[in-house]
Amino acid sequence: MTRCCSGIRRALALLMLLFTLRGRGCCWGLKSTSGDLEKSPHSDPAPWDVLQRHKRSWVWNQFFVLEEYTGNEPLYVGKLHSDVDKGEGKVKYVLTGEGATSIFTIDENTGD
Figure (tube, rainbow, N blue to C red):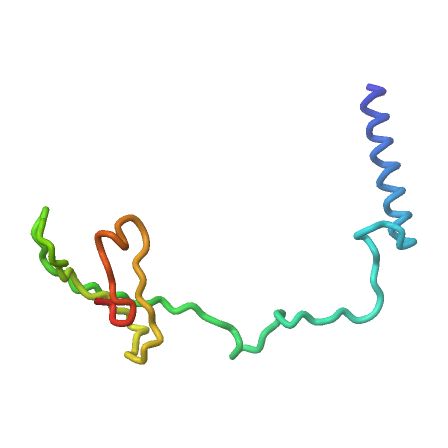
């Protein structure tokens, strides 16, 4: 029982010491500030500055491909298109993952 009480006393003494030092500005990270706080450039943006994520629609025109095709010529499987692509050349189509560059290829400008 005395060990428990001595542990509590030590913790309370440490807390009192920290609060005393904090008041004098001697504790790192606990320094109190006076005056106006600077407003962060990222806080409270104007309503028109808030970015909203819009869900994109992806269109995948599917084509039939023979299973286990062994021909030398690549087969056109389909076209990937996003509703964000307005034909201005600002959208880049990229395939990633297993087989993306060896089995499948895509024209980064058109989605073919």
